[in-house]
Length: 171
Image 1 (cartoon, rainbow, N blue to C red):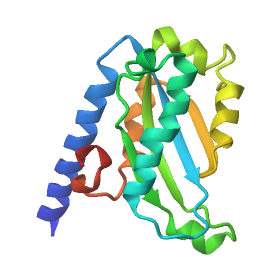
Image 2 (image 1 turned 90 degrees about the horizontal axis):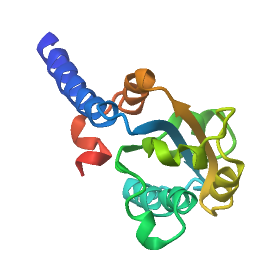
Image 3 (image 1 turned 120 degrees about the vertical axis):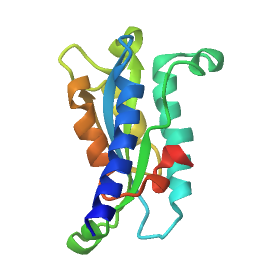
Image 4 (image 1 turned 60 degrees about the horizontal axis):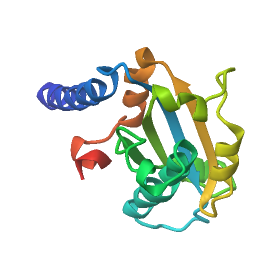
């Protein structure tokens, strides 16, 4: 039994360390911890639907905030695939709302664009929050600046209890 636990820990640590390397070895960007909760009305849509919606529609709100033209928007997010879908069964049982589908993500933002997303008082730009909350399928958006030293903790939270093959960036 301990062999299986050790094997899991090695797989988990290798994945988390790989992601840490991707997001902390560069000085030209800062990090955001992102949680997007969806208005699912209890529907049992596939995980791919929510990841696709996040990667296309939600991230486009970030891209539009960072650059005005379509050509300029293509390169404004250096890494946009560190996102993990989660279906929170416990929240479905404990609250009357059925907003149980959500995405946790780690989103690097180039330092030169940081001021377009995060205000001087370290709060998220109100226009971006308003844009995200105006989306039909978005129930809530929680976005917080994340110090690179806290990135490992956030990645560990994102990947908790999941097998490496289920990570969205492996698909």
